[in-house]
Length: 138
Image (cartoon, rainbow, N blue to C red; front, side, top):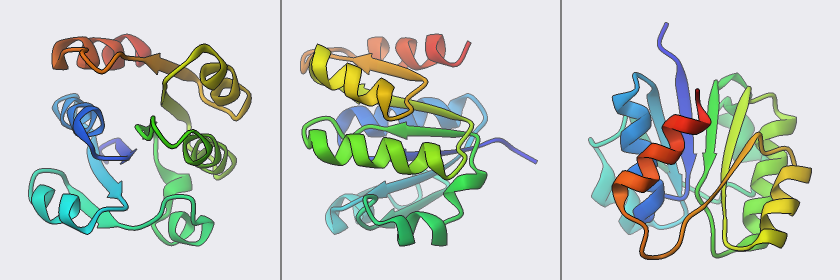
């Protein structure tokens, strides 16, 4: 059975990380609040779902606790990124990678259960993004 990854937040960096996880052999479930983003990405990931990942019910219905990897690519909504990180870790995801915007955000994510926290600037390249994910999964 293939390893499974969930990527929450499919804006530029989230989608970049989802594509890299897929190249690494993961079946990838993408979750985003935006119906338009979900429509645009259908067929590019194993499964794409529109929904609010702060919803414990949604995450349970999707069986997130059985996933090998969660990538929380919600950076700009700090509260959401912390809550989602906490939820996926509590549900039993083996490895959680989260993205942050500041040192304080990084500390909060680590305390919420993130195994690895990635800080990327707005001008970071896709190559830097994928290199950080590969390093996090070594």
